[in-house]
Every structure is written in structure tokens, then in C-alpha cells.
Image (cartoon, rainbow, N blue to C red; front, side, top):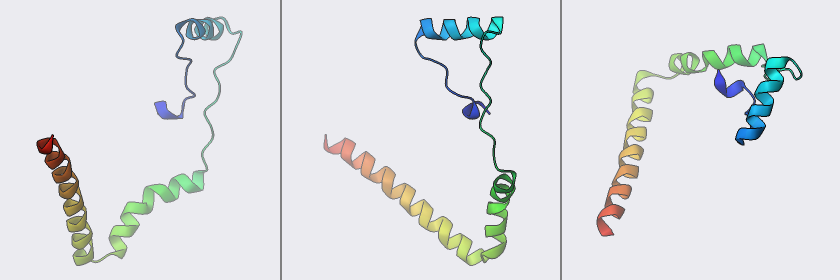
Length: 84
């Protein structure tokens, strides 16, 4: 994932200096931070575990509430555009 990689400098001169250092071996590319394997395993199970725990009716209620919230948000944006 690109998000795990440390950010590169935004300044073109600093970026060029870093690229030359990496290419010549003067500096090494920093290692991305290590992840906890137990946390990664649990994170991938979260949605499936929640689905198994909730009844179909409760999942439907949660989805309906989310839809109402999304539509309410879009209505407030569109109504504020009309007022201007």
C-alpha cells in the first residue's frame, strides 16, 4: 500500500536530493512501520463477525438509518445552494 510508505519531500530540490541519495546508496529507503499481525487478522474478520451477530431485520434497520442520513445530508447541501 502506498499509504504505508513515508511521505516524500514536496520541494523538488529536496526530492531530487533524496532520489539521488537512494539511487547511489548513500541513504536507504526507510522501512514502513510494522503492523501487529493479531490486529490485522481481527480487522479482516470484523464485518463478517458483525453480520453473523446481527439479525437480518437489525441489519436492515441500520442500513435504512444510513440511507436517511445520507439523503438528509444531500438535501441540506442542495437547499443551501438554492438559497444563495
